[in-house]
Image: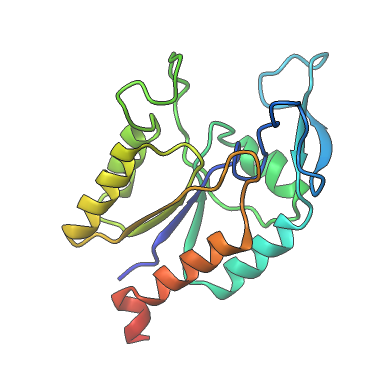
Length: 181
């Protein structure tokens, strides 16, 4: 059995959304970045937790998953965000730029239309802050049909926590290939 994928979102997972008062967690540090295609006179401020880099690097070194960025940051995930966290380069899903006004145009996360065919029959732990009940039902159905699927949904104002990685580690340890190793 090939390694399960770890699909990792950025906005709401590594970059928290501001609270109602505009504040971000005190654990996060502001960076000013220039995403691909952005006007050089209009960079973007982002807030990253410097502890996420070592946390993820340690997790990836000790857990049998194949990490893939699954984010609207696309290639910028591996050229901008990952390096700011000190993460090694890993692949990204080249998601399209749909013209949508909600991230759930069909009642579920829009990325799923692109993730599902890309995954095929691969097991996956997917970390994103924007799943709906329809996404959780999809994951349960996939798992019931023999393709282990775990959705991990951090709070978008706090982002990734160690407990989320513990949940994934526990899930991976229960996969048939992990038990056989």
